[in-house]
Length: 270
Image (cartoon, rainbow, N blue to C red; front, side):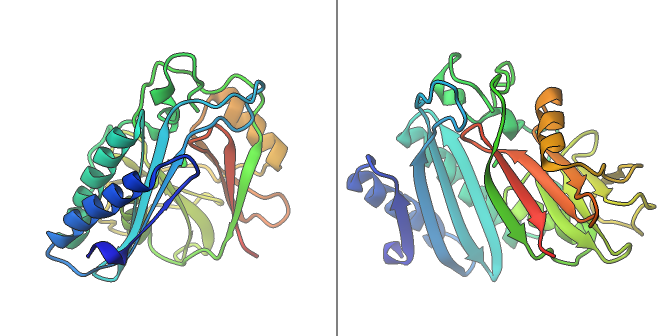
């Protein structure tokens, strides 16, 4: 099984650790009662995008992507060191595979807020800024001006809010952008109280019919904002992510905090 696991590590991480990661992940998969394919593991270090001093901060970011019985899953974890990061990753992979193969059920809420987990391993001096890890909520978001360091354009899937919630959970996201066929508008499901799942659309509309997920509904449509306006609003309100509509086109966009403290932008492809 180990030869079927692809491991990519950043510069400075030993080949020995890559081999250990391959063996640990293979052991988890080998004990699963499911067909697991396309296993890809990435291991990197955490820096601070946009930090005024440009200093590197301690911390490790790990991610595994796979297909389990034909369904894509992803697990992403951050930790103080390589050993802890790999422990978290293997535990998370085992839990995610079990959840996918046993049928979807809503995840518990509240859950540790991963947007504040980004650099907790670096200690109190490090700014905490998801892409999606281990929260220490007393740490603030970065105080310096935020900027977008990564952009993604995606062909949004037309699916029900229930299907979007299942995808969000399987892919280890806290927010998922899709197109709601009932209203033909771009929408998001995201993790928030009191039920753990909330639906918002670019245009206000009524609740979906008999959803399986315990969805609450945002009563307002997404605000139309430029990128600069969205960055300022997210930063000023210390939000983990922000759903907004592009002026003119009305297409949905998600601005989110990355593990390195910078911002990412997901935009619907035209």
